[in-house]
Image (cartoon, rainbow, N blue to C red):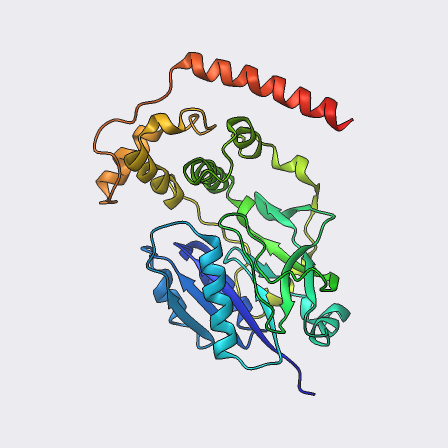
Length: 328
């Protein structure tokens, strides 16, 4: 039996800061890279066009819907690439470690029985690629495809089919390097948007739960074990001429503009209880207008009264202590 083809599925929205790195690395091992672009305005599509293995799909929806985009990507993989195939669902800020292809787990993955869920460790590179936060729980981001249906959620969805009876293969020696925390300001922007989305979509209607999950003061170092990143994760890519260390930052991110659009649609008051107000929304609004971002408020952003912030902090302290007691 022939070895399976590897198909990488990636949703993209304004990922120009890392897309060349992602596509350069992914082109080294993937047979096809299927990109679903959602209205990028930063040159992401032009970058994708430089890579022969890339198939570009366009998602013209302005709505946030992980379920819809995952279904589009998976169906495209099944239409474009015949079986046997392995699906790897990677975000643009996730790259395979350079030593992955020489690990025993790589061959184990290629020989996996169709219907197997493939799980990988996903270290968070922290502030610089030379540091990382390691986690004990592997992520299910691959699938030896057998055509099983996928039942994703609208937000924070597992990316691949997860049949109840499917075996899991934990490939401990293959690392997927996650670059999100190399830009903590961008990660904070993403967390603010998630809080606003969960409020607007009513996927997490509890204010205290949203403030807990999307805390503006979250210390990411406490989510795992902080240690130095092994050189072996990067050396092979550097030898191929791929820059794995340069990090691009900016003052405002597209997620900030999305939050402003929600202010325009729903009004700021709907989001007064979300933990998003330690940020200069008025400065962001003025910047967005100066560069022609559409659908943002045309008047000053109204922040919540200070007494509301004090009350919410008090309630959060009680909530955290109660959860700690209940979990003992």
